[in-house]
Length: 205
Image (cartoon, rainbow, N blue to C red; front, side, top):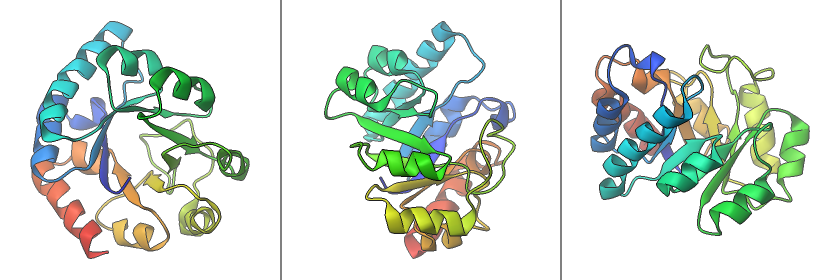
């Protein structure tokens, strides 16, 4: 897992359809898209996942479903991202199969230690900095925490939480393999330009 990883948020899109934001992000070189739907019905989540799958598949950009293994299976998504209160990794892997991308959020040092025995594809270091889009998480890791995880863990790290053009390079230098953003793309007036700028910064780092 590397590059710029878009996590969708309908509210953060400021009235823009998620589909148009994702299309712009694809054109600008996004590496992965996670569909996150915290406050919607299963049926609407499923419908949106199918639409994004149809957009992402031709571009060969992976679709990751947040939390919901059932949705991921229903639309044949490329993977699922699990939080600490979601389905255990072992069960998700059994259902999703060996080829699926499975990411796991780590919010405490205990989470990091326990993840070492799991064959997850990446760890979501959450949050690196305080952010209004993730209100149900523990204290931010900060750059020192991210670096500590990088020095300890065998897994690729996807950093998320308060990331933007202003701090992307320092986060990569602290050990992140990929940069996950929500508002930096979804809330941008020009999602294409925002994604392009983040991608350039990533490559320069």
